[in-house]
Image (cartoon, rainbow, N blue to C red; front, side):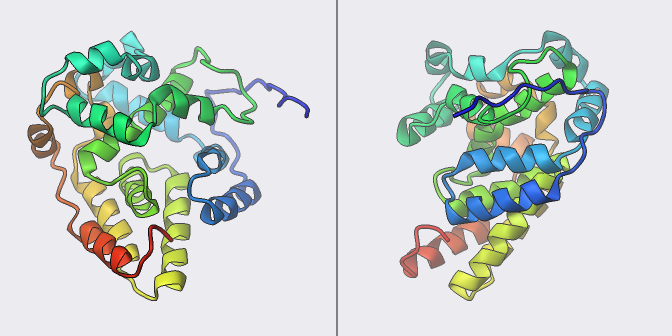
Length: 252
């Protein structure tokens, strides 16, 4: 098997959207919700200048310039179990610790998946590339903050809606629409679709999570962080979870 050839990328320019690549990846993802590689293929195919635009936004928010200057690699920070374990009970970090233990997921594991068949170097030293890694690494923290479970297709689909509202990344909208349409076919109900839309609306109302200092955020009490960030309870999502269980469906 030939190794993927690394190609130089001009990170200062929007990348051309590749709809065919995105559509093929979406079909594979809808066939296997655990195939996370396809998510990153869709993101690379459709997100264009999303990282660049949001990086520029980061520079304009309070404390954003400091975060950009420090350039902390959050996959490494979130993989420091001694640091995570040192943060108090009831905190965002405590919920994240429980999440890691329950699912077996890890920040470094997600990072490794993101580089599968990527045609660019790892850990590129460019502000937009760093920002893209940051967005990848905070994904599981968003699961904690929003209450959308990461180890079920419904929870992922709802966070996809939330993420599209927060980031404007077209790849998120593409995945969310595909998952919602598949749910209509399988369940014959619109609750799944309504839950994804609820995720989008909650993302629009919430504070801009990409501008947060995540080292400080993880030390906050979880309930207080949700209140400060204006993250609402996912009522329709919880209803959709119940309906799926009653239908004997773990996912779609």
